Image (cartoon, rainbow, N blue to C red):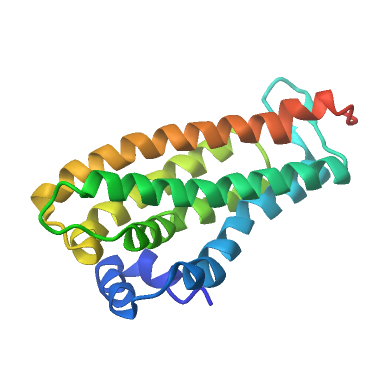
Length: 200
């Protein structure tokens, strides 16, 4: 389980070739990688919002009740899992014009591994300070971009020249998906708490 996390962070080029040689299934990807890693930001946010509370910088802290945080966490978790699949479909759609056309399965697997730094950056939600979380997301996004650029030729078999276009387009769409997830995060873990009547 989670065998590729360190390799993607330390030596991504070699790790992409290793992942490609394994020819894993979508079930294996989700069971051994995505389900566990996607839980990191959810569990961290659950702990942070119930124990410490969101600090938006105005001196007001928003803390969620356990039941509210639990249901918010489930919705957030499902949204993350869906986002991985969506980005895989987007990559497949973008890559279909090239001579080497990866399968939809390969593209979703690719998206699941590219998201690894984003999942890990969710650890900072243990201390839900807005600027700190945004900084961690930016760092995670930058390293995901590196994995994307390296992985397109190494995993999907698209040349660097062609891959540059796929990388740029995928990043643009990925940032939009990330913004939707961030908006959902704020609604579920922050301002939505006011509507649910939690204690401040």
